[in-house]
Length: 194
Image (tube, rainbow, N blue to C red):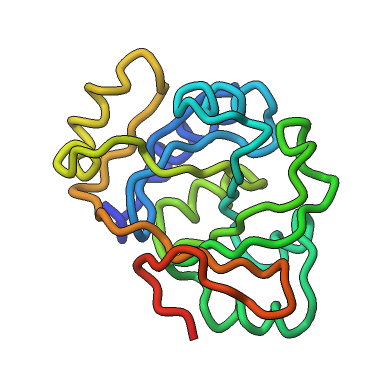
């Protein structure tokens, strides 16, 4: 399905997100939970689903491109070039957050930025016209985390749409903290950071 995206499904997903819905969707790493990143109530729903203390947990967003990132995160020219050479790809870059993000981000000084190399995820963000909040589907069972049918069963009644793109991956994105003097890999995942 990834190379041959049905726009009717994308429209349905975007309508769901605009209405405050929660989706499970594929990325270039693992299946993830997502919602409109500017909808505070939807973010709180995801935080409670994952039992995250919303004020303490780092939150990440998926943007359609680097120019959209500039609306939500603060970065310099060197960091822009670094993103340009690694994105789209399996990386989450942590930057200082700008105040355009909603209440759920208040108290957090940082935001994780993703631009996955996955046509479905990017098509959703482009059609929505703003970022989606992203967090990996929770759980330890490898089969369940890879299989959309099992994820749909586990989250029945908790999420509004599960986007089935076939078997997913298990290795999360590589997290690179860009808030210090030098970028630092804080979680080695699928991407090799150089």
